[in-house]
Image (tube, rainbow, N blue to C red; front, side):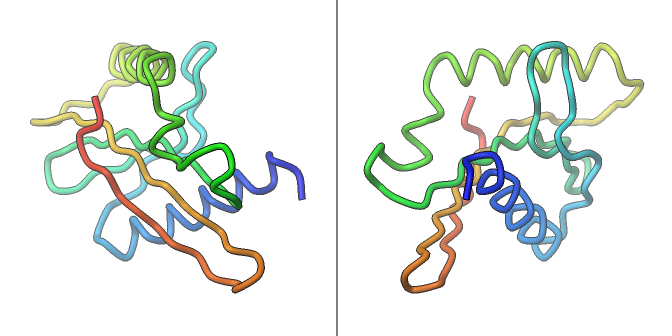
Length: 118
């Protein structure tokens, strides 16, 4: 499997998870300039921008470690583009991270949801 396929699989898992938690999905893979926002959702009056990191191994670290300074800066830029481009108004805006760990051997998936990562 390529990284792109694994990433799309993880985004699908994350989207299903968010729906089960009561989030309404606004957009997937939103193109904001040179940035892509994996998932945009809302819960009550909060607009949530979600970065999804999918891993099949811990060799390069966990997904949380991959959301460093440059990724956070890119996410902020994408959020700003979305807010200026789209005509939406919400009481609160936040950025979350969802990590998806796919264990191919045990054929199981683990999801962690980190709120307010910026």
